[in-house]
Image (cartoon, rainbow, N blue to C red; front, side, top):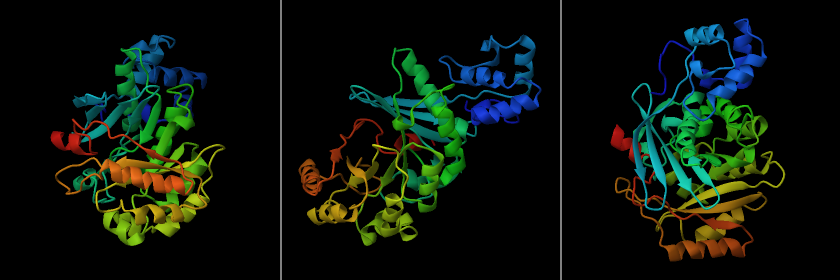
Length: 348
């Protein structure tokens, strides 16, 4: 289960700095926090008895006051292309999803940040769940821990993390920042900020703050180049319209040699015309970015269909003609519950 004893604080909810403060308040030396923190994220299920560089008395005191959480895998589906989708059951019975996408030189894990989502995007199955609650930092980090544990047994590792699963990460901002700190700490999971990407539908006030508090990559779920079209697909656009969003991106504090990823789902007959490509190219002028074209993962419940590959290739060529790096992400997991929210829906 994700949380074992509800009235005990979970050590995986704390950064190393926070953990140090807590243990010092217990009367322990500050250096003990690094030892405890590193045990939490070593391969193998963490437990207080395993912390063998701490005295028995110290381990007992920690176990009396704290717990170490883990996730329960409720369901797992493996695609013929190697994509693996996990449904994790939380302590309160809710279910979230993670997706492992293996490629030749990397293993990318797509993470959830909320149970459900409040953004209401018309093409997203998770939106039909509505918003249930935010995930804790531990529940975000434990998605990585659980899959890492599984891969270690095969001699593999998770190399890249993307917050593109269930939920809007910037709507769970404080917990997200804590999770990013834990994930990137070299005493713990030690992910480089270059290998972590946070995707947002465009919560403008939080975008600049993300850049100030973290050096992770930024991805923007844009999916339309004009406000009327985006209003229909993504209700958030009525609050944060495209022009305001793009201005926020121009001032985003990008680390050297980084670009913002613009995500654009290709939906047949909705946003895939030549005129849409030309308008998108015009709107993105002045923004250091690359464009990721995503074939829509079809689900019968929502009524949309993916653009034909010929149409996507034409769209990409127009963008390239305008001087953009335009990538076509191959649709993965087509033979399993590929669309965001599908696997969780089976477990509800």
